[in-house]
Length: 244
Length: 319
Image 1 (spheres, rainbow over the protein chains, first blue to last red):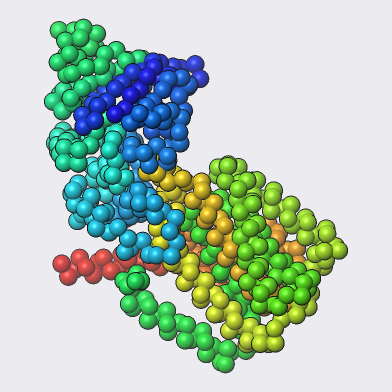
Image 2 (cartoon, each protein chain N blue to C red; image 1 turned 90 degrees about the vertical axis):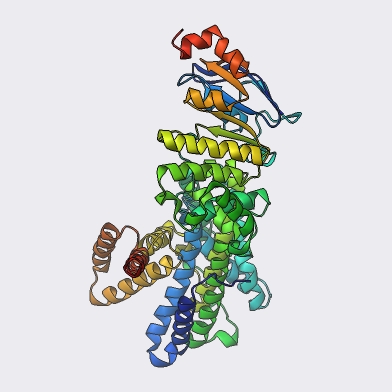
């Protein structure tokens, strides 16, 4: 479904992504792991058009999407969440998600109908799915950190994506919150037939959830394969499993 | 269709306020009627600015230009063409919107302060044009004695006309802000990067907002001409743009009605203090500084906050 070929990008002299390769099949859950600064977030930013790659190709559903702007890529079916909190803090929780739903239905430019009555059922459905329906009229910025991270995922779901990218969906969460959130993500992926690409620091979660894992180091893809294949890889063992 | 958009109590309060505004001219001296009419004109201008500043998060630092373009457009159309005045009234806001589109197209490529700087430069260009082009715009004298339709003669008639247009315009602005367009504009203000990630072409969206705001600024410009019967280059000068920015800040950026309060405060302070002393700008400045220092969310923002926290306290006590 998504193919990344030999992608490169640098900030000044620093090669953040230096030949990343990735193939994601439809319906699979794929994790990207690697130490801090390995280029995971940069890779995601390249895929969603927030950065333009210097070299390499990104193919989505057979179409070259390399270097397209974010809003175009989003309309093709790729939605994402961000590592740092990235919501609309002054709007209500409901509006946060509705903005995405409106955009998905190409209603963002409609001027003469109150948004209050538009696509309410769709928006509430998403909020219910992630368990935020009870807080829909709260101002998003006033939610707890954990709820804001969930809201972040809910906004991404508002675009009815086929392909969902989650950049550290559990950053800053407690162990219980992390487990609950990842269970939610897994349930959503299965229920909605989403293809999921995510990165996550908790290795146990990654190995239990992902169908395939890609390991990055210094901007390069070291290995890409099933959890078992990755587990047996020597380089990965050195980096993650204490070389045992 | 618009059910539930506005609180019932608020709606009846607004209807009451409108009724008071309607009978007011019969009760108060002409000077106050004139003052209220100019407050309404300024309030509409400030509200149109707040659409892009408070709700759009853009550094629209020279919004007065679109007001001036609207005013000059109606003045020039009436004096230079034989078109009926009413048609000129309708055309002028579109001229302002066109100016908004052109200036907006250039500015929107830049961000924040750069956006502001280029807008101030382009706006000053238009001001220079009005100021220097004697044959066409009357230069620094402006254009005076613009003939108005008979029905608008006299301060009472123009007051009612201004009140009507003002009311219709703010209803329009209210609906625009509650529309999908308005919500998305606020989302882009809060977080442009995320807004692009959910499929919104943010710059185009913001450009539309500038055009709409310019249109309403143009409407305010027409109302100014209706009230004063003349135009002059000061309408395009950046000082005015700064003043309406202060009105928005004073009333409250993130509230709908804030700019009306801001305009009312500023113009009344200026009139009443101006009557007492020559040094009214000094006193005005101190009052403004204090208000901004102690009520950073604006006067109206402060009131709304108080009302809200009181309501929440009541709810908690009952629960």
